Image (cartoon, rainbow, N blue to C red; front, side):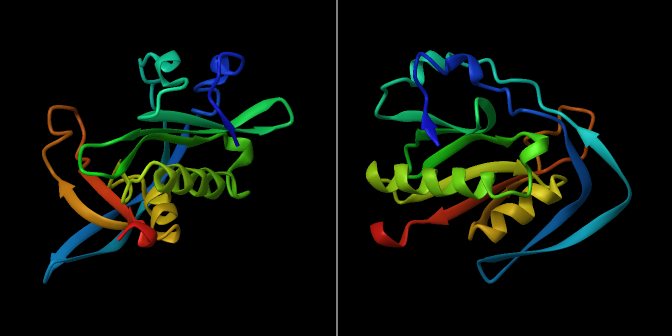
Length: 176
């Protein structure tokens, strides 16, 4: 993993590639604990996110935010964009892995790097938001130890979809 710098700035978003939607999670809150079941769609489909329109150069040497890039040789195959949030979590603004590198531990490596950055920055853990219909991402976050902390059914209602926002948290046990 390489921290963002002027030399690799052009590699931002190269790993932002389409992904498959195979189903969704159905979160439920009982006694203050979130659980979920899975609904597998009869037919999957491909989804892609537009590149965020951020000033990525502002992340260079900023103690409150950073970006790490993963490489295979000279090819950028993953990225994670982080910032310190007001609630003492390091918020993952974006994480993506190139299609050719999925399932090979790149995402896990990016999360591990984010955990280390959060610890070094005095944060209490990591937080992120994804959609309930991004089942593969939800499975990945759960596998990494994240738990659901909230669900927002209104965040995406002004768009032509039925997505809900799911907020995932990974508490840093060293900073408790």
